[in-house]
Image 1 (cartoon, helix red, strand yellow):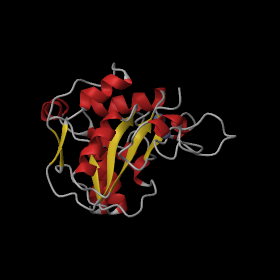
Image 2 (cartoon, helix red, strand yellow; image 1 turned 45 degrees about the vertical axis):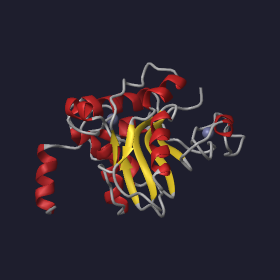
Image 3 (cartoon, rainbow, N blue to C red; image 1 turned 90 degrees about the vertical axis):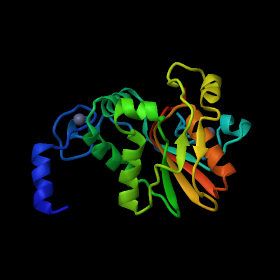
Length: 231
Ligand SMILES: [Zn+2]
Ligand SMILES: [Zn+2]
C-alpha cells in the first residue's frame, strides 16, 4: 500500500487498543501494557499450559501424559484472563475487523519455523454469516503475511453445526466437536500450523489436528492468541 494512502487510512480508521478501545499506535497501548499478561515459561512442552511456579522447568504436564494429542505442540500468546477475554470479545462481537490489526500483530512475531501452511479453525457457514468474518482467519492472515507462510481457509471445513463450547465440560466439549471437521484438499506431508483465538481444553484444535493427521499431514502444531492458565 502507498505510504500516503496508508497514512490517510490511519487518519480515518485510527488504530485502537483492543484492550481498552483508546486510540493507540501500539498494539497494546501504554496504559494497558502493564495489565496484559504474556505467557512465558515454564510451561507444558505439549499443550503449552503455563506452570504457576517459576521453580520448575518446562516439562510435559500430567494431562498430556494421560491423553493422546494429535498436535506436536500448542502455544498461546496471552493468558486468557479478564483483559484478554474482554479484548477477544470486543474483536469477535464488535463488528469491527480493524481490531484484528493489534491482536494479529501480537501473534505475528511468534517464532515459527518450517511450516508449509497455516489453517485457521473454520467456522460453520451459519456462524460465519452471523458474525460476518472468521476471527481466526484474520489472525492467521497477520501471521502468514509477517512470516511469509501461505494461509488456506478452505482446506479444512466445519461441516457440522456445533453449539458454543463455553458452558460445556471438557468431556462434553470433546463430544460436541467430534466429527465436525472435514479436510477438502491435499495436506499430505505438510507441516501445518492451526490458528485459533482461544485454547481452553484444546478440544476444537485437537479434533482439527486429528482429521489433518488422518489425511496425511506430516505434523500439526497450534498457535492461539490466548490460553487458559493452570487452574
Ligand atoms: Zn489500552
Ligand atoms: Zn500439557
